[in-house]
Length: 173
Image (tube, rainbow, N blue to C red; front, top):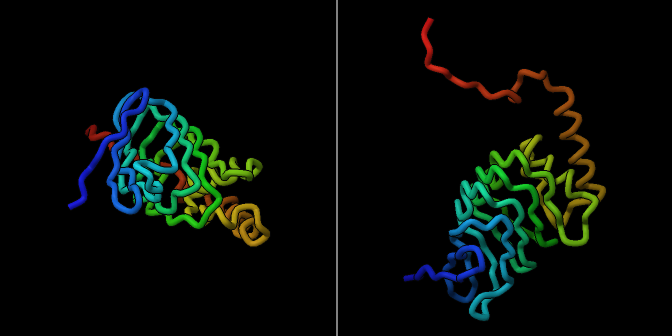
């Protein structure tokens, strides 16, 4: 059975499961910036589990190591203060809605590709186009063609189609 372990950091703790690879399972504390190490116990950090950072309201910036290759579903969802995530330039598997409701997310930096950070952030926050979250392809001609196609679709969509949230108040007349 895999046991959950704790790595104590200056402003909290990082929880993980160890084997031949390390999987990050959660975090505790009040940190606003988190730098995930590339290895723990001598093993590479390769994955972040489903909902690992769900609703971490104070988290504003996350820097991920070059070793990470997998993000579980909703792992950063509802991190309402999250502004920047630095991703490795690698072939990464992203689960469903990794950055769902991260409205302040302005930059998804990829190491050595600073000029595409705002485009990548808009792809997941404005366009809901997670298929554009391909760190190895970002900035290539093929990727820019996908970006342009999504932008055209977005610009030709009626303002009321899918871009407003409905709130049920429960009030009666």
